[in-house]
Structures are given as C-alpha cells and as structure tokens.
Length: 438
Image (tube, rainbow, N blue to C red):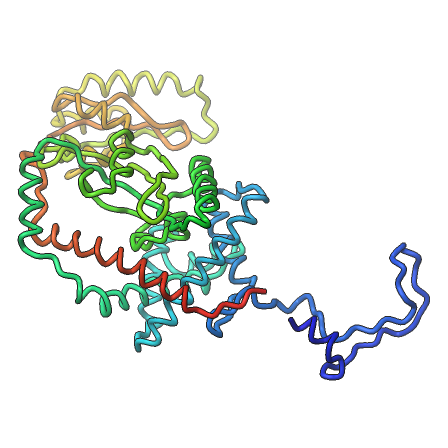
C-alpha cells in the first residue's frame, strides 16, 4: 500500500535522488537518471499481518518457525517450510486475538507468571534453567520473547475460559454416576492414553487442511516432536499440554477416533482422521485394562551394578572384562551378596527403590517382568558409557486397577465441554477481527 501511495502522491514523501553517473551495461535498460520515491530500507521489517491494530512481523514468524525446525532436527524441505510459515502465521493471529480478548476482559498476565511457566518449559526441554534456555533459543535463531508471547497467550486464554465459560458449564451428578456405572460394567476392557493434534476445517478449506495434516504426520514420522507440533498447530485446548488427552475409553471419543484408537499399538501415529468440525492426528502413548491391575504398575526394588572402561577401549580389549562381569553377575543368588560380588569386580553399586516397571525401557521391561527375585538382568550399555546390570531385590505387584474418582470424572466432562465452547469462542473472534495482510 505504501509503495502504491508513493506513486500516486509523490509530493507527500521525500524523494531520494541518485547522482547521475555512467551506468554499467547489465542488460536492464536503466535510465541514466533514477529517482526513488519513499524509503526501501531492507533492514526494516514490515508487518506480515496487522490484527485489530496489533502487528505481527516477519521476524515473529521466523522465530516461531525456528522452534519447529529445531524440533525436527532441521530436516524440513523448503517447500514444506513455506506451508508451515502460513500455519505459524495463523497461530500467531490466534494468539493475538486471545491476548486481545483477555485484555478486553481486564485479564493481565504478569511477567512473573510468564517467567515461572518459561522455567518449567526449560526443564521439560532438558535445558535446566531459564538462562540456559535463553541461550539455546538464540542458538537456533529463535528468541525467548517468541516463547514468552506463546506462554502469555496460553495463560491469558486459559484464564479467560475459566472466567467466561467454565462457570456456565454444568455436569450433573447423574451424568457422572452414569459414567461410573459404565466403567464398572466395562471392567477389564481397554482404555487408551492418546495425544491429539486437532485442525478445524470447513467444506471450503477441507482439502487444504487434510494436506496440512498429512505433512505434519510426515514430519513427525521422520523424527519430529509430536508434543512440539501439538503445541504449535493443534486447535484443541489440549495444545498447551502437548495434545495429551489423558486416559480415555472408546465410548468417550467420536466414532472415527475410537475406531482408529482400537487398531493402534503403543507409540503409533495415525492420521489425518475425520473428526467433528475438522481432522485429527492421533498418537497412542499407552493403553491399559479398565479397573484391572496393570503389571507395569509393579514397584521394583533394584541394585544397579556398573563397570566402566578406559577411554579408547576396543571391543577386543574389553571382551575379557565383559565376560567376567557377565559370568559373575549371572551367578548372583540374591541381593545379600551383590555388594560382595561388586567388590570383586571393582563395580559401582547403587540402590534404586520404588522403580515402576512401566517406566523402564521396553527391552528391560520384558526382561524384568520375567525375572525372579534375587537374579540379575543380562549386561547392557556401551564401552563409552559403561556396562550395567540390575539385580531384582523385590517386587510389589499392584492389587487393583486405578479407579477414577467422582471428582476426576466430573472434571474431565467439564474440560471436554469447555474445550468445545472455546473452539466456538475463537471462531467468533476470527470472524469479527479486522486483519490486514502484507
């Protein structure tokens, strides 16, 4: 628009005149005298969108894109990046609308609140503290300010929903009791812990949204972080927790999602799946039997024995020590003499109590579930990081399944209804917004 105005009303802008001098012959047929109207400084970033007067710049998009690129190890094709930029811009527009609506309702998020959440996100991403996370974000060409903005939008929107929607969502005692009765009747059947990325669609843009979902599935399957994509792209209220739906039964899901979940295995990703008002991508985190003891909830008491090798050790030079370690640990007949055996091997010993079987890596789970008390696992590890065994000192098996309480069920129903109304609320904000694109 500014470029057009400079041609229509040149007197309104200062003219920049280039000194007349012979021009090299570059085949562009340039005039000898050249006048530029207005300023075209490439170091000035113009607005990518203006949302009800609030500016979103290309830098904002770049910094948010950097988070997605980092979550995928930098392996995103250029054609895919162009599509992702459009989605990131849409997300930034939604965040702006959420912050504006919260402000219109006198809801303000303090810097301390943002900082506390930022510190938790830093720990979840293995950065330890906010200062280390700041350094990491800058190293990937993002910025702390970009993530602060996303956190501000999430906190503001959550507080707005609690004020304007949650008080008007009612779940009767009869509804909760009905679910408890169905749970009792369903004892022993399967429930699923699912992650979901939900993308809304209309008949006009359905094909575009499906293609977008297919591209997200492709990127996650290639090693991208499901949680990162859910936080950036999912339009459900669970986006703030990485798309985690918690434990759900098929009856609690739309038919299409329930059918897909029942065919999935743990750690499997499927989608896009048609769901009410859009499409979903599902990730099966885990599954278990309703109100039935889960063997993976067993609490283990362990001794961990480990040996290390000199730097630069080869498989051939370490083989003798490995064979001796394996032979000695397999001969252990109880935790009582594990310390003595470790001393003869010059091995380190660490006691680990209250370890949940299901929290161990898959291969170790399988071995440990069949291991007798007092016996050890086969050695595992590497020459660089050391070789270890676990000795099983005790096991407390779960007696009954975890039955959700009345309050937990009621809270879940309320969250589902708030989420549906939140989608309608945001849709209305988009419809009423004045958005200028550059």
